[in-house]
Length: 378
Image (cartoon, rainbow, N blue to C red):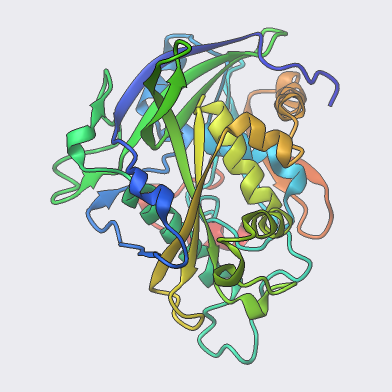
């Protein structure tokens, strides 16, 4: 990675969806007054990949950029040196040279990892017959917590701010009785120099009001866009150092966060990169724990904290320049390669990223049926 400059220009292209206002009651949550986590059962979430996004498709046809991705995919690649578990990203290069960074339909890409970077990451244990602390189950639990938390901390639809275009993925006929989760899709273009115009769908989760000093004697409420994510505690006796959040989070939150930064370095870096990409002024982190260590279905919010994404990046030694340098390097790898389909893969055993060329129909399910032969090849 040589060029580590930040983008020469950032430009908003389109805003879709809506955002609800943040409920500042959650600033006062503590272990003495925890809040049970509710399930957002009627909310629909849309982790739609790049090639399936109709807005990105139109922007690509209109020639608005030449590299396309979602914030989740981009943030993953930007921070991937911190990753431990294997992963893969599909890259499609069109005959005109446009690059699309994509994910496989069947991949675990959208599931959050838990304690991936810990000294002793979770594994299936003999004393856990139901496997509630196995990596796959923890991943599913963490992903559900994250989605539920992001919606619970918002106020009702009365505070809603609608953007120019509706949510591009919501279909009232298909999603009967459901409504889209509060999310604004902010399509942005980043000028990375060397003729790289990167178009990214970024995501925001809510609006918060912050007091901003306007004159010596006056403070005004300023609307700020925010992202929201949740860290989760499952069983402190199973983790290295065994910090119990209920004992420490009110008086020593810094120690809890430092431990999380060690155990979840990749996940936190990814969230920070996503928040920076979306231009969020604030990133809300929730600390969510199981009601009891043996119950993976019921949770309480023990604390929440606002961070400014760029300040938090500095705190976790995440360099914004290095993030963009990683993307420039990857785009450069494909610059002189012929049009076709490629896979970027992290080696399961070593800190090495490999790039493979694959046939154009790889990972495509014919008629949406699961092709078992294809699955076994993956």
